[in-house]
Length: 79
Image (tube, rainbow, N blue to C red; front, side, top):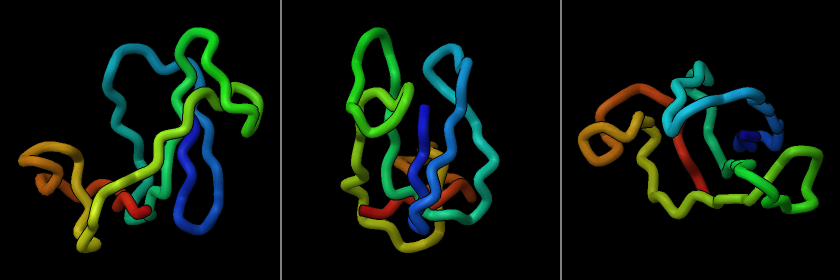
């Protein structure tokens, strides 16, 4: 998985297993992610996989997905 932050930085996480991951990204905004599963590739970078853009409207309080995305202090998703 590769995360694109609001400031344009890309951070790649290799060797993730399962369907969930908790990543310490602090108060950084997430603009989108690429997910590599099988042979899908986007051509955006090595191992990037399919890109998913955020369609969320955020108020800047973050969230982890619990309580319909309002239940935490994770990174904020922007589009």
